[in-house]
Length: 449
Image 1 (spheres, rainbow, N blue to C red):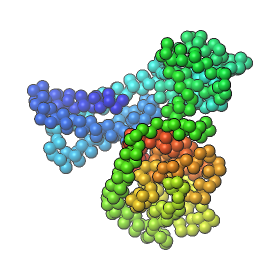
Image 2 (cartoon, rainbow, N blue to C red):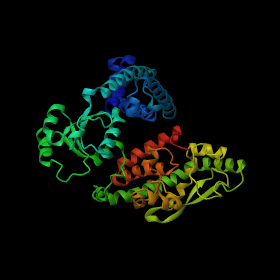
Image 3 (cartoon, rainbow, N blue to C red):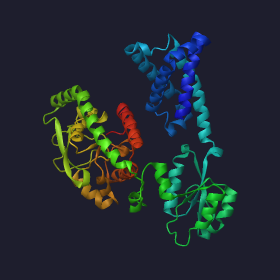
Image 4 (tube, rainbow, N blue to C red):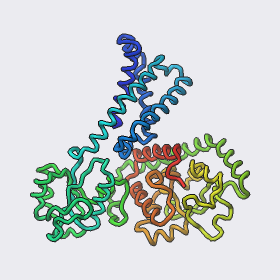
């Protein structure tokens, strides 16, 4: 989607120049670094598309919701480009060209998106999945797939060992046969992928047959936990085996990656403190004017290797908010002040944590540090919860951009699954995705409480 739409946006710019100035003038303009200006405009438009969820498969699957976000994205792009042209006049492409390009983009992009919606939702283009297993684990996999139909998957059925279950509907797909009939079922149903979700595999897994199907029929064979992880962006604590984390690929570059990350943390925290200083002063004044008490709130949190440290936050609650002990913040929490509600929504209350990053207690990206009282309880209730302390806690993270603010043990369990995914798969690319998602969350005030 990114590559194709980038090319489409670029061609709209070329077409606008050609319509406005003619063939020869257009060629000359493009040769005089016009192509570079078009690439910059393309980047601005695609960033706006990203901010308005137009690269979210759920949004792509809703045809009725496509035109307003496209128009809003192009409107934001027009404002951004106008500011760029004003600040850097050399970036101007030509009078009237950008307006004409916007009209072309609105028309072509709307038409393309309608086609893309149809393609993604067409059953014949979906990847057909056959699930080996009929227990709760197999049903859980099918449920996750059904909740993400827009990702282009279709479950064709379950295959088990119990003849009495054949024909039964476990969730929506049925049990279509037995493992002993797997080769015939593959020939009849023509799956693209077989997901192995057998809880008891001793003597029940036809490895020779699966290998033949993989090599001969080019069918992908995948273990259920790996498929679940790739599909959902989290690791299920119910089916997690320590080997999944121990034997995760890291590579020799991991040590270099961590050193570069520390340098990046220091640079980002220094820049963040410098740029946000006026905002921090204004926030401190607003907090002091509204309610008595300290402006900065110090709270003990658990960090790397279980060591505790004091996290810095702008106070967003009354000073008597926890007279009866630590309590999770709920939705529309009455303890939150008026100023606190605003700064929590915009994540301004987290800005002082740049000082924690500068001191090395936190990183820019990682699991959110939890309070010691909650950690003790959560370690008893959630498997492998202590594994989140293998990396530095972060100002933002994969769980923060994928799941709303946690206010219960169930929320903590769900967010921990995303944290485990990050711990296993941390990389520069995943960090970049998290930073982009964080920018979108902050700009639109999502997932906060």
